[in-house]
Image 1 (cartoon, rainbow, N blue to C red):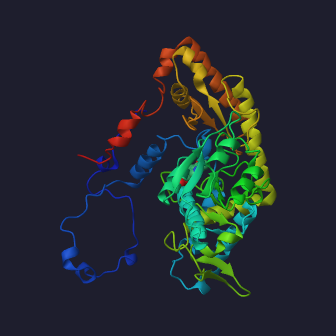
Image 2 (spheres, rainbow, N blue to C red; image 1 turned 30 degrees about the vertical axis):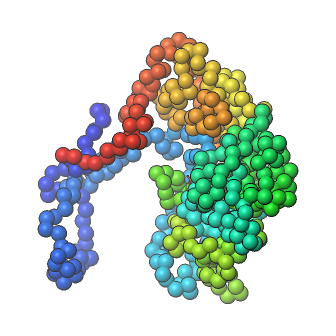
Image 3 (spheres, protein in one colour; image 1 turned 180 degrees about the vertical axis):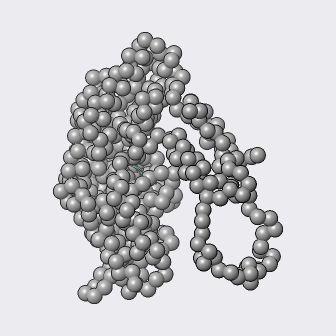
Length: 484
Ligand SMILES: *Cc1c(COP(=O)(O)O)cnc(C)c1O
């Protein structure tokens, strides 16, 4: 059937309706008594007039235009677009939770506070931190909170000469951006030939002005920083704090803890590792965990517990203040708590093991087909190099676009920057061996085609609703208004 390009406004017909309200829910007040006259609109709004089935078809068809995790594989790098179990959605819809109001008295929201307390405790245990705040609304927001905590710590000690933050060249772009937002100068530390932090380069950068080092381990190449204990010693001997970008903890949960590696503060992306939805900028959760030395600066309120009850503690002496309205994105917190409870300690550990096993299974096969420049073994992800396509006049981008014709979402491409034709592949723990094998078959088909008919690949994809977009124009010249 031909694809339907009509907007909802162009569908239906005058007077057609798709809803029925019971009469008694509409109070019979004259509208003028409820709303001041000058605020009542002159014309009725130009809403679509569609029947129920027209609305259902419209939105169902729209939902099919995009690739989705419910319809196909997403080997999508650090964004961890992993499958989010449907039970998370059911618990997030429990009416007693959905209908809470943030100004309700504490005695009436004990269950919600218990859930948040449980989540704070569980996340602290998973990461080896002393306490967790659930307020930040995204990973980048968690970073901001974490670096503000570090700044408060140094300032409180009268240590005001610290003006720089060190970030590796493989870091996620939000790391340097966060440090700059907090008023620090960013210094980039190079990777060595093994794709790890170059210790000599780090030594040279580290001095009495260094407030923090931001790292992630495993790093963005999916490699474990073997020298982490030495790095933490160098940092702490220098009075520098260590920040852990824990956006993607799939590789380590239940196996090793950033707190035990010597990190002082970290953020989690509950909307990545802890399986809550993750799209279009929110809502998310970038909970932040801290070691004891940062406790006096935590945002308020913190959910705490005494003998009788859970309560919101605003009495944190040197708090950096609030970083978000109320208590964080509560609906995301419900989903993350559900995930932790349904998985259990063993399940969470098994998820990490499976994430690493799946990544290595794929890695081994991709090495035989394309290059994987760093490491012989990876953690939850690896970065392939598509430079081999150059001999056919093709690029990683062509390869990524061709995957779409096989119902596979492209991996993250051209990141991290230290691999030229980078393709960052993270299968995640939820994918079966059959799916991974099928992915490899598709890779083979595309490589065959690269050899036999490279011109065709230059114009892929062929089967998607839109073909190759001018991404620059789509970003700079965005026009999504409806015009008749
Ligand atoms: C996704 C991600 C972030 C940023 O998280 P947002 O929720 O998108 O702000 C930071 N660091 C790493 C490594 C990430 O993968």
